[in-house]
Length: 123
Image (tube, rainbow, N blue to C red; front, side, top):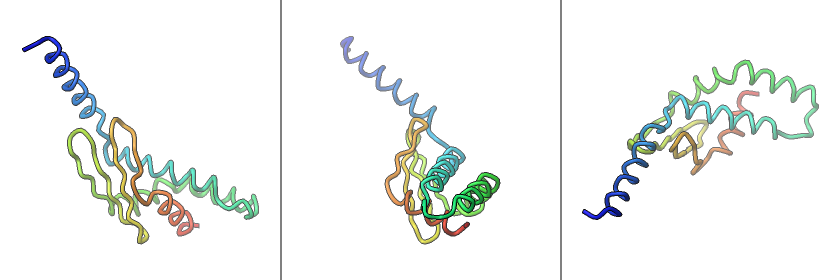
């Protein structure tokens, strides 16, 4: 075996080990969705009175984790392929699909719509 082939194989195996070690869990996914919901609330309709906006944000800060745990976790399926995971969540008639790899999440479908609907449903 040539040295360059061995080096390529070693690099490939190293990348696979990094991907497997950093493959996100369902808890990581829920934290990602909680952050997305928080961002959506920050961008919410600016015509609402600021007192109302502050109330909504403070309620979410206190109850956001409970909301995510109660609505999202039971409706989430994780397909773990070892190196990456695909998360599918069905919530409020929206199908959310997110690819997770190396501790990062790439929304594929429905994240924005679901965060807006969750925000409206809660508040």
